Structures are given as structure tokens and as C-alpha cells.
Length: 241
Image (cartoon, rainbow, N blue to C red; front, side):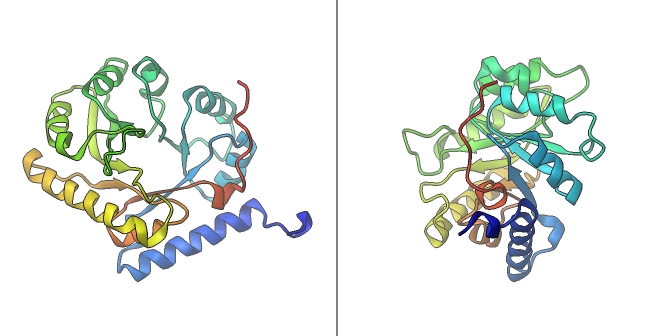
């Protein structure tokens, strides 16, 4: 496609919003049941500012140093005070200080050690909302707690002051591959549903589904879908910060 005919950021975002709304309606769900998280890693703060001006509120970042630099740059923007930042990438315990209290939601907690590290860095009286990342396909190269270890970890995290567990997240083996990803989304919903009675409360969020499979994820109960390239275009090289 010639450069002058390439879709703009606004056009790509609107197309994704329309596609998500269509998927939500087809699944018989209400529009406010699913949040679109625009994955902005490696993209400039100006792109976030533009989408925030259009009404996008949730942005996902993978790398703490990059995310904190963008947060600082956008802090005084008239469109960005109510932006909700999501930490969606693998998070090491030594980076917990950069995440705790700076993100509306940390999607990628996969150990008691990390939950405790986040909790220690929260101001007194506040709690960091978290999701437990599940390695639903038990792939050795991926982060996440195994399905068999999920219940034990969830019960341990329940006792950590300073964090609040509100759901689960996954990157399934067939991530982005449409119908091929559906069985993994079903499995995540089943894991969540079996965990709730053990904890004695609801876990309202399932973070699953990306550009190629968010429709299937929505049909299987996703409440947060993470879309990057379809909104921002091809990902540039990681910036030097």
C-alpha cells in the first residue's frame, strides 16, 4: 500500500474499536464488560497522546523504563490525567519498585515473591491490583504459573497485604491464531471459575486475546483484550532510553 494510502492511527483505532464492539454484541455481552488495552510498547508518547484525545483510556506497556518515561512525559497532557496504565510484560522482582503504584493493573504476576515485592513498595493503606499470569499451555519458554500450581499461588497471594488479586492473564500457545486459540481461552475461564469458590469471592477479570483472536477471547469471557499492531501499526525497534 502506498504510504499516502496507509491508514492513520485514528482509522486503525476506530477499526479495532468497531471490530471489538461487533464481537461483544455477537457474544451477547454489554459493551462495558470488555476493555480495550492499546499496547503501546516501542511507540512514542505522542501516539498515546493522540489516542487519549480520541477517548482511548487503557494503555499497555511491557518495559518499566520505557513506560515510566512515557508516564512522566504525558503527566501534564490535558488528555492524559485519567489514562489507565497496564503493566503487561514479564516483570522481575527488582523492577517492582517501578511498577507498584504506577499502574492501574499489573497483568503478569507469576510468583509469591513478585506479589510480595509489589506489596512492599505500595504506600501504606493502598493495594496494587494484579492478575496472575497463567502458563496455560505449560510452555517452558513462557512465564506464568502452571495450571496445577495456580490455586496454591492464588491462596498465598490472598494473604499478601498491599496487593489485590482481581483475575487471570494468559498468552496461549496459539496466541493470535483465531479459532486455534479458543480452547486455551476456554481453559482459562474454567480455571478462573474453579478458583473463585476456593477464594470465596469473584475474580472479575480475564486478560486474554490479541489482534488475531480477540473475537474468540470475548466469546469465552475476556474482560481485557490487548491489541498493539492493529492500532499503532508495525512496531518500531525498541527505543534507547
